[in-house]
Length: 239
Image (cartoon, rainbow, N blue to C red; front, side, top):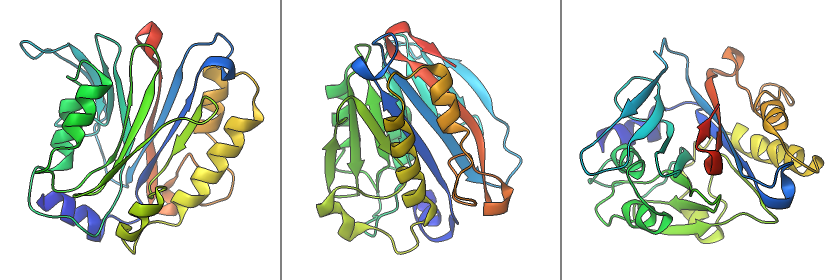
C-alpha cells in the first residue's frame, strides 16, 4: 500500500483511457475493447508476457516493468483493462496492483468482482473486466466502497475520475484535468461512428484533439502514452 500512497500524492497527470463497443455498434457484431496506457516520462521496458500458474488459466499480458500486468487476457477469453483512480480513503492493506494482477486468473466476471471487492484492499483501480461473450462490468472502487458500471447502448468509456455520484466525495483533489477532456472526447468519437472496427478504435486511441489533453499523450503534458492495446474477447485476440 506504500505504492498506492505514493501514487496518490506524487503521480502528476497520469492516467489511462478505456473504450468499448459491441453488438450493433461494431461491424461484425463482436466486441472491441481498447486501452491506452499512460505513464510519467521514464524509460519503461514494455514487454508482453505469457504466464502459466498451476491450476489457473494461462494469461497473456502487457507490462511496463515486468512485475505486474497493465492489461491482459487469459485463455478462456476474459480480458482485464482499467484506469487509475485516486481516493481519499486509502488505507493499509492489499495493494490494488496485486488485486489487478490476480484478475487475469479469474474464470468469470462474478469471480473477478469478488477479487476486486476484497475487504482488505488498500485502495482500488477502476477494474474493467470483459468475458468471452463480450459482457463488460467496470468495478469503480475506493478502499471501502464500490460501484458496478455497465455499458450504455453497447458503448462504454472510462478514464481517471469517479463517475458514480456517491463515490465522487472520495475524489482526490489532484485528479488530473485531462481525465475529463479525454472522457468527453472518447465518448464523442465512439458515438460518431455507426459501426466500429479495429481501425476506428485505432483512430480514437491515437486522437490528438484538445492539446495537451489528448487521448494519445505526449511529453508536452508530462505524461506519455507508452502503448495501446485492442482486444477481441470472442476471438481471443489482442492487437
